[in-house]
Image (cartoon, rainbow, N blue to C red; front, side, top):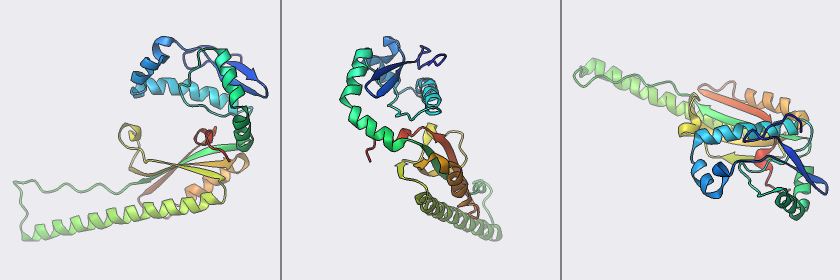
Length: 237
């Protein structure tokens, strides 16, 4: 574990018990006490700053072995409590590690990207009969285009799920991202899913999923990963 730093910049060490080992690092009580966490977990900037090194440690380890990611800010008082936890859950953890061995997680998001509406006429520029009819025709066409985009997005989700069934051994569905979680993303997120895929099939999964919506206008598919299997760490077979 030489050179790997944890959430608060402290060295990462291994705490072993039986056939299992937990990667741990020390954190300051002022930020990670029960009371402090109730406040901190509402702070997205703080969460991002904590999540980055947490993720980096997991990805570093997963390049060499099967990793069972625990929840962010999983806190134990000392190494003895970590060993007690490993002893108590050894059978569950061993089963999960066997199931997740040689598998990775890939995220799939589908976005609907309808064209922007044209600006409406200003109140002091009321259209005459001719321009009014043209305006209404444009608005009807815009609605038809938006409806077609949403139908295409739903079709893309169905296609992706059908393709994924050929590769994935498990899946997880999340609420579409909105608000600050969706900042920077073009279009509206209509599907947000994760798939557990054998490592050897990850590239083919990515290609097939991305190709599944190539002929659908106004739809964008984003495939992320491969990651350690975060979404499946708490699932039994």
